[in-house]
Length: 153
Image (cartoon, rainbow, N blue to C red):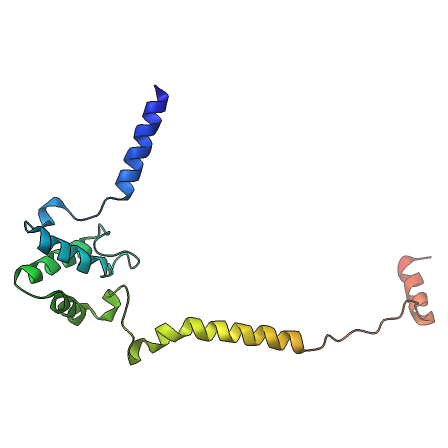
């Protein structure tokens, strides 16, 4: 009997992790329009969660953005126009994949620059010869005298 409870628990856990945050009252009656809204929402960042799309987020602002996207689509906007409207209001940060432009060049090139700097640093570190410290095994007479005074013998 516990085996069935375990299977049921796993099924519920898996199904709830795949559930979207879109509420039933947000879903559009037209399936084609709803699919367009879902595809747009999947590409927009939740400004509260910052690492989730508005389609996956439960934040109130994400809900407002989902409703806004659906309203724009119902009013006849194309997908690009709806996204452009959201970007005009919230900036390019709202896009999960920002386009390449002059203002986002640092965002796109920083990982490559860090990688190149790391490779250069490793290369330069390996080329510097290691200096060896010259040590002698035997103590000088003065050092032996000092050692005897410290040890007390």
